[in-house]
Structure formats: C-alpha cells, structure tokens
Image (cartoon, rainbow, N blue to C red):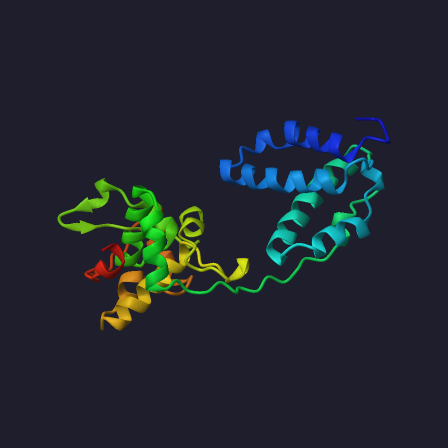
Length: 239
C-alpha cells in the first residue's frame, strides 16, 4: 500500500476486500456496486491511482444517466478518500466533479401494462401487486405485511415513508429507462383506480405529508389507527 504507483484496479480490489465487508451492506447494494466496479475497472484499466484525473472521471460520468452518474460519483469519492488516506493520491479527483440533477421522469403504469407484468411475475410478486392495488400502500409497507398482523378481521399496518417481470412482459416498449414505472407506481395506479371507482383511495393510502406519518412510527407510545375498507375490484388486472 506504500507503493506510489499502486494501480487503480489493484486498490479497488483492496477496497472491496477490506473496506466494504465491515459495513455489512445489503446484498442488493453490493450487487449494484459490482456493476459500477466493472465499469470503473474498464474505464481506468492500466492507470495508477494518482493518474486518474478529474477530466477522466467527468467524461465517464457525462456518458451516464444522471442517476447512475451520481451513484458512480458517490462511490468514487469514497474510494478516492480511502486512497488519499493511504497516500496513493494527493487529493480526491471525484470530489471535484459536480452532482447531476435527477429529474423524475417515470411514467405511470397502465392497466394493460400491469396486467401483462403480473402474468409474467412469480407468485410472491403477484401477491405483492394485488396487495399494492387493493391497499395502495408503499412498497416498504407491503413488505412488512404479516399474517400475524391480522386481528379481528382487520389488517394492521404501521406505515413507513420511503424489474425483472416488467422487462419480461415488454409492455412498455419504446419508453426510456428513466420513464419506466417501478413497484412504487403501482400505488399511483391504485389511487387512480380508487378514484375512478368513486372510492376514497387517499383514506386507504394513508397520510400524504411527512409530518403526519409521525403518528404511525413504531416507537410511538400510542399508535393512532385509521380504519379503511379496501374493497377495490382488481379483477380486470388479476383476471
């Protein structure tokens, strides 16, 4: 590590082996990092750590979508921080680049599109889609739903704020990557269908503001329950 000509790819191996494991990152996060690491290795192959310049990094980031560019930038800043701390480079070239503005461009699911996705989805994802449509809850709340949360005919949900089947369905061909709706947009479609059916979807979906969600935190002494009846007919999607 005291070698001033340490290659970037060599240090990246060290970073993966020594820096990441103690952080106990989620499997999904590590998978995303692996994709970025492959990009970094290809981009800076044969370069010493102190030979990677601001311009090199900027050119790589400019070729990416804003979201991916910001992810790569944040990761490179951390990598070069560790490299600088080892004396392998005089400063952090990634930190001198500018974060990109991410515009939310994702479009909404259509009934036909979501139906096609559901047909390609495994059983657990079909159940999650059905629950999201009927209850209009966020994906984190869907994941927290448990059978032992059903008491006296009610499902108790403490709300929190927070693609595989979609690609297989190929129902949104021609849409840009940043426009592709994810699981979160199922909630938006649910609210639309509730309104179309003349039902109060917002009452089922829960509070819209961050401040109001404080009443639903797990460590609150007295959780304030709001009763709602999720009786939306989703047979046009589920068949």
